[in-house]
Every structure is written in C-alpha cells, then in structure tokens.
Amino acid sequence: MNLGNKQGTNMLETTKCPTCDRINEVLTRVGDRWSMLVIISLSEYGTRRFNELKRSLGISQRMLSLTLKKLERDGLVNRVYHQTIPPKVEYSLTEMGNSLREPVNALGSWALKNLEKIDEAREQYDLVRESS
Amino acid sequence: MNLGNKQGTNMLETTKCPTCDRINEVLTRVGDRWSMLVIISLSEYGTRRFNELKRSLGISQRMLSLTLKKLERDGLVNRVYHQTIPPKVEYSLTEMGNSLREPVNALGSWALKNLEKIDEAREQYDLVRESS
DNA sequence: CTGTATCCGTGTGGATACTG
DNA sequence: CAGTATCCACACGGATACAG
View 1 (cartoon, chains in turn green, purple, red, yellow):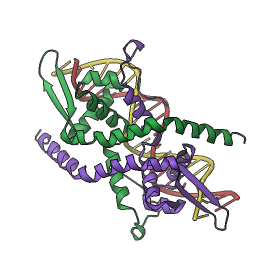
View 2: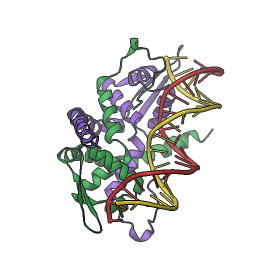
View 3: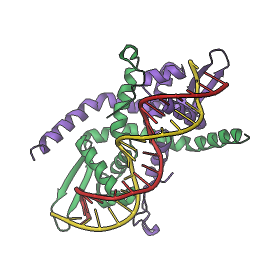
View 4: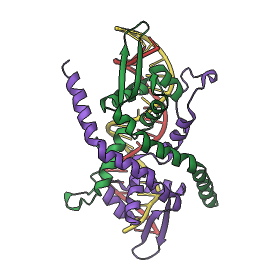
C-alpha cells in the first residue's frame, strides 16, 4: 500500500490526524477516477453491461476490467454472469455501493457549481505570474 | 490532460454520460489523495503552517509543495507569507475551499462507516477464490 | 461479448541535497 | 522554516494481441 513516507518520521512524532488516516484509506479504495465513474454510471443506469460501461466512460478494456474486479472485491458492485452465446455480464451496485451515491453525487454537484470558478482562479493565477 | 482513450471510439458513438464528464473533471482537479487530505486538515484546523501539514499528513516535502501550489492556483487555498526570521507561511481555505468541506466530509463520513464492511467483503472475496 | 496477457510510455511520488 | 532541484523507482494506464 505504501502510503505516506518515512522521511525523518520516527515514531516519536506521529501526530497524524485520525480522520485523515480514514480519508486516506477510503481514497485509496474508491477514490480513483475510474472507480468513481463506474459507480456514477451504475447509479444512473442501475444495471450495465461490460461494453456499455466501456463505451460510455471512454475507459480502456483493461482498466475497466481491473476497476470492476476491484469494486466487486470491495463489495460495492455485483457481477452477474449470464452464460449465453454470446456471453452477457451485468454489473450493478450493491447496497453498500448505493450508499456511496450520495457522497459521490455531493462531490459531483460541487463540481458542477465550481468548475468554472476554478478555471477563473487559474487564469487569474497564471496571469499574475506570467509577468516574470 | 489525456483523459479516456481513443480505442475504437470514433466520433459516431460518443454516448458518454454528461455527469461523468463533470465528475471526471473535478476528480482530476481536487480528487487526488494529497489535495483531499490537505483540504481536510485545513478544514479542521483553520490555519496550518507548511511543516505542520507535512508532519500531520505524512506527506513528503515535495508533494506537499506541489499540492499546495496547485490548490492555491485553483483558488481553494490561501497562502500568507510572513517575512520573518525564520520565515512563516500560513495556509487556509478560501471561501470556495470551505464550500468543499461539506462534500468531502460526506465522503469522509461514508468512509468511517464502511471501511470495515469493505475489509470484510475483501476477506470474503479472497476466501472464496483462494480455493483454486 | 467479455475478458486476460504483454509491452511500454508517462506520471506520481519518495529520497536526498541544496537555497533563502 | 519553507521551500526548490534532481534523481529514480514504481504504479497507472493505453495499445495491441489473444482467448473462452
């Protein structure tokens, strides 16, 4: 997992905030872009097939496969295999996965409201420094 | 930025969900572990100095420097330089940064509630497959 | 259709040394 | 104290080929 660093951090000064440790943990689990996006997509559609997710998210086959496996392992996503020809696999959120919708959507709403402001802030910031 | 991939994604089938695009954007901005942790820490303490953040987060000097600069550029964090000896720099959240507290804390709360469940799910998952 | 395996470029991030 | 600069290892992730 290798979180944080050890640089001079002898055990005498372990003053980490406990909350941060937890956040840290959760982010290493569901905090990556692809996990979030898969969860969003499943929360919107309820059930999606492998290639539906792949196309709608613009994710590579490899990363989708890895992401789904990870989410399944974490108990956030259900995988149902229909052994037909051609094969059909349906993914959906588990109960726990569904409970993630609210906080994730909260983040999404914040994004919608503030992305423009961030862009402005960047322009402003860059403008000030480019007179170097 | 290079998000997504082009693999067979000719422009005829651009069926991406709009929400995902936004989430994608926000995650590329404030979604990384260090940004989140810095925001959490600042939201708890109000104001923190460089080395306070460094120690409490277990982050390397390099990454903290980069992260803070990025957050400042995005208009989420204020940087106040006190030209004393030794120098003293204080970081705090901007108004926009503060508005991020709620969604981020929501995610944090979810984490606290569900990390244990995730661990259990993993154990269960691994248990089932290790009989290979 | 639903994946797995391999290759490999790029970015992330720690370690270390140095500056004001 | 508050950074910057350099080096370098490793993980992330796309491209491609192949399999069930």
